Amino acid sequence: MKAAFWVLAFLCALAVAAQEQKEKKSAPRVFNSPTYIYKAEGFIEMGEAERIWYTSGLMDGFYGSAFFGASDEAVATLSSCTKDMDVKQVAAIITKYVKEHPESWHYPLSIEAHNALNAACPGGLKKMIH
Image (cartoon, rainbow, N blue to C red; front, side):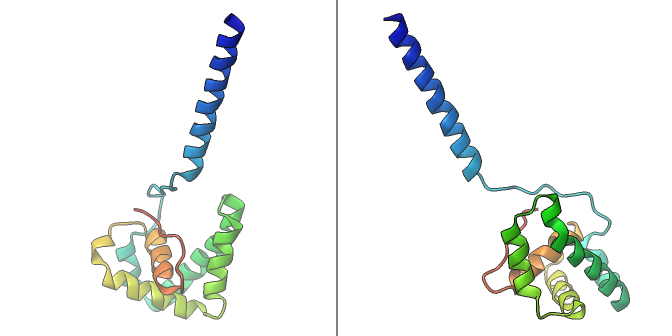
């Protein structure tokens, strides 16, 4: 009888652990505001040359983000969307988006730039949550 109790207790513990693992995998990823240099409002205050430089570095960071845990799929989706764009076009997409969303000017520019590309790409990227 004791053996049956312990087997049942063990099976219950396994079921609970499996359920917790399942819940962890299906939970959406929430992004907390990262450390940042510029707020979104700062992008529209920059001159064109500064926007180009910022966008160049940002895109290099986005493309290299797989080294820091971004999925290969996310990087491939971004790369596919922007493959025919030059940096001026990407900067223009970000500028347009930021100008049209003053309610987000206090958020990190990197997040709003990602959201701008999400809105511009067919099928979208995964939206960053502020």
